[in-house]
Amino acid sequence: MSHHSENIPAGIGFMLLTMFFFVSLDAAAKYLMNFYPAAQVTWGRFFFHTVITIAVIVGLKKGIRQQIKSRTPKLQIARSFLMLATNGLFFLGIKTIDLTTATAIMFLSPVVMTILAIPVLGEQVGIRRWMGVFVGFVGAMIIVRPGFAEIDVAIIFLLIATVTHAFYQIFTRQVREYDDPMTSLFYTGIAGMVVMSAIMPFEWQTPEWQHWPLFVVLGLMGCLGHFCLIRSLRVAPVSVVSPFSYTTLIWATGFSYVLFGELPDYWVYVGAALIIFSGLYILYREQQLAKGS
Image 1 (cartoon, one colour):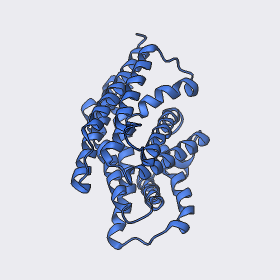
Image 2: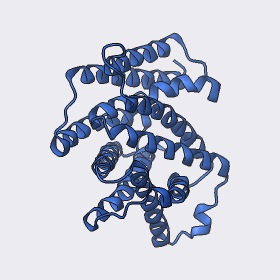
Image 3: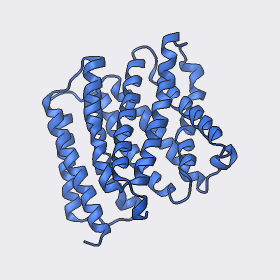
């Protein structure tokens, strides 16, 4: 990216909007799961994501066939299934766990990515990044506290979601070399729409009229979030905007308290602080290594 094309304030602004949209999606999903199965809520998230994406492509007059044609279809489909798994597991998690705790656990994804980079990308991970991984692991143990209380199965869902999300991020980095962002945006929702639509005849509960807009909001927030994320990474360096992704903790705490009257205990914030520190340190080391330091 050339220097004149960078716009750091805009990049930060897009990243802040990304986090707001994603947490809004999660809050709407948590609310809807008070009335409908998690599978139906997941369907709404991907069905309307795909419908809105196609509408945008048509509006931009880029051509549907051109935009859905991928130069790496297997990678895009794998990435799409990983997004389905991540969202499905996360929704199952937040059904019984507050948004703040769930969000803090998902901060582990950069830590998991560092571990997966060894077998998947063939990267060498030095002692300093392993120290960052260890600190993140300690933060996760503080949040989960195994042995001090019975571990909710929802915690298991969320921990698995950090792994599927890490794989999703790795594959997303790889497809950027081959496909247009709109192509990736389309494939983000396609697996979820197809798979969950096939399941719906067995899970469907006809929504109340006042809940239909919230189902649409799921897809809209997902589309807007991914669009802003793409824009953020296009106009500003990853090292600058990535730390602002941790503002999700602020949004999640606010939504949890205002909408659901939920607040986690202070140990969740202690663990989250350690995970955030480890993620930022790993990012810093990646940047240093990229510069040859």
